[in-house]
Length: 355
Image (tube, rainbow, N blue to C red):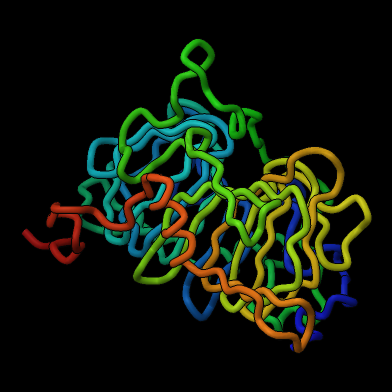
């Protein structure tokens, strides 16, 4: 395992990542006004990740999330109609939409871009909301990427060992990451990013930075912890060096500011807008901040991270959902809900098509 993730193989510059600015927007026919930048799609789990753009004036049909979804608003404002996940969320907001949630049809008031991790398909409904007009799935992401000649981020260590084709087109539109995602609002300057839906959305700028004594150079904003799956969602301020470690479970992250020194990458590191996926079993001898600017990124951690002092040395620490939750609880940090409480009308989609 000491050679895991093939640190010397670097055909595209980012072996386990992709520069989202260099991916073209792909229009989704199931919802005119909706465009995607596909990042990853798993044929095993059905999970997929994408940057999503909704254009002002677009009329998005009612949807049912057949699997959960988490999102981070990068720019603009996302408004979800009435219901248990109703919210108006602007840049800097993190949200989690539980499985089987139905969101009513809506017209987009302003352009919005967000990072979305989809844990299952999304069904777009007909106007009567009793039948399906289209599905958005991991296979759709794969097909959309293939049609544009794009290569998605590898899902496994074995895939990372294989040569990869171009991950982007020659011409592309950049992702808009607003400076507001990192600007803490004040009473005189800005309103909070979330105006409702507090249980399922949180203004990450208002969440305190927490420091784990084992990693004093790394501060965390703990956003969601699933005791069922072990998945933890974070914002990380990484102003130091993370020592040798294994990802016992996968992880993904999007750089919001600064530059990260990563594997066999360039001396200047990778900057804002680069999205990475670490497959389970990935090993890093060091991951570090490059330059003086704060290195800040979103992170989904899908399993424990094991720290040591080098290959074949004793384990120094293991960081899992339990440590993240204990850190949040000790500092009275409220976490985003993973389920809809007390609302049986949202628990299943079985009545679809019935009278």
